[in-house]
Figure 1 (cartoon, rainbow, N blue to C red):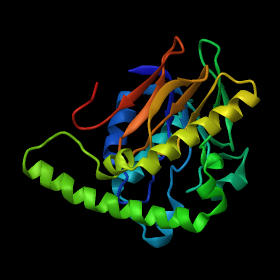
Figure 2 (tube, one colour):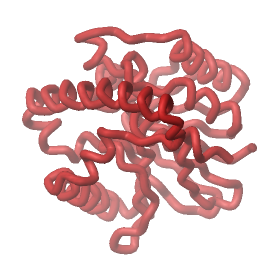
Figure 3 (cartoon, one colour):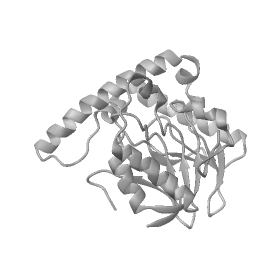
Amino acid sequence: MRVRSIFLSDIHLGTRGCHADRLIDFLREYESEHLFLIGDIIDFWAMGRSIQWSAKQNTVVQKILRRARHGEKVVFIPGNHDEALREYNGTLFGDILIAFEWLHVTADGKQLLLIHGDQFDQVTRHHRWIAVLGDVGYDLLVRINAWLSWLRRTLRMNSYWSLAGYAKRKVKSAVTFIFDFENSVIHSVRDRGLNGVVCGHIHSATIKEISGLLYVNCGDWVDSCTGIVEHFDGRLELIEWNNSAKP
């Protein structure tokens, strides 16, 4: 299927939790004119503790590079887990442009700010050690989830289920954090006179309107395996790509 734009975030290459196989399938299914990588594509934080880089993760990188070489406009907006790349703002690497943020105009004229979103996370900005500690705990949940997935397959329970995603939805403080994050992002976009935002960071995929502005979060490729596509009429669609929900 050909679409105008693809928006992906929080792939976390270099980690055990990255579902590179599903992302490869997704990229095979969807071709586009624009590919926006909105942060935490490579997880330098986790790789500092232990590198988990598979052949399929190599394939993801090669597919993205190939798309850029063949004329697809690829923009990489670093997040907090790959923030070292922010030093190269405005630089081209293998036909991929590194940008701190990006203004995207949809086919129907909406001006959308593309930004990872960690700038609006007070924990990440001011208490990095807490963010790193939380990242370690999240990695533990992902490891436990791998065992649970194996058990579900053994019992022929084929639908995908994420322990980390379930915990995030059930913990009241996490829900409050998500609402605070969304409102902070929208407030910033309104101050800039834009129509909306596409971001990542909090691993909570959605497309919705907040106070008259469009809020879009790409989700991730660790828990939900989600991405956003823009069709040629400007319509945005959330794609959930797991074992039980393929086009």
